[in-house]
Image (cartoon, rainbow, N blue to C red; front, side):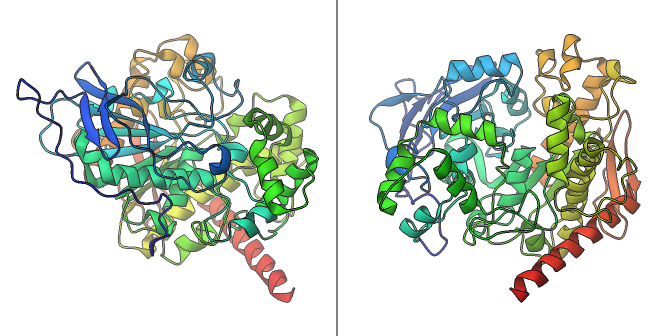
Length: 548
């Protein structure tokens, strides 16, 4: 490891021309040379598209649960017209159109690929949006049709989408591994993949017309969590210059730790303890660490996916003391997050994610959500007689809304500005049918593909109709904010309602609804209380640790 502790071992930095001149004196826009070889992409409606580019070696065999290694160079021209494999996961978590794509791309551990959309005609280097997909750190792929970037590229943005290891393949620790691999980062393999992909962008994006000095990371749900994690990892410093965290739900009192027990609740068991449970489940017996790790690396990925579905453990990144150096909220509080412009936000009905689950599942999940919390912690919620209701209120407000505002508040500790949003918009045809804006409602509009694909809308009930003109106008404004921010580090620009910066003293949140307008003190009483209780729980836990 270098002094900067790069996750991906550095590839020799070579200087490449934009491409080799061909007989006609021009380089076709779909032919690009990068640091590992030449790529043949395709031109689609004025956009050059490159799919399935390996940014790291396949993390298979002895490279399972190791930091990503450099991709192997190739001779000749590599076909970049087809997507690479998606990472192993259970099908059925997404709509049929997404499952069909995942089946077509194939599920395989050899999945560390990225995809690029860039305009054929461009004047100079363009800003880059580096998009991290969601899916609870267990599902999804950067190649899902929802994320195709033709429309963003036509607005002079270079879009990069990326895969990263999921589930137990992307988040795993065990005491045997801690001993055997003590000289390298551990546990957060999906995060290491994201950093390796950002390093790849720094080395290569100029060849696609992108500016390595204007990279904005963006993500939704697990991707938004990833954005907040990357805001605090020392290894990602200088790899991006703006951040958009959408629908990111994180605890304010504690993150799960790789090696240490946490407070009661979802952050309680260490990732090592979770790994010990896996070894027990598969009844693995070995006399040495080497034997045990060999047996673990021989487990079929399908078995690990099935086990994850059975256990339903959280897969958010954990504190590992090297890359994720501390509890994320605490890093923001100290002003040690990366000093870059920041957007954060969540939606009014984040608990809608749980509404389609069977009643018994909602009951168990509701209980798991509030494990370790006292009646005083849950006092803002007026439906405490139902475990489901309390758990879902806590899920939406105690995790998503509280953390979203809190991270925006802590941006006052650095020089860069922050903007906070709250989506209240409900699809026009569903008003009166659902209580609020569902998790990710704005997502299909960010990429702009809903005009051609109404099936991409959220929630699922909306997909039986095309988006209305009002729906599309809402989406166009959201997309314009994101494009402006990617280009300038500020979401404001011609033709969109003014969005004031978030500051703790003014507490202005931009409400995304039929009208876009700032509101002061949104949910202030509830969120202030939830913040206070989270900090009390944190202090109490730290005091117990000190006594022990």
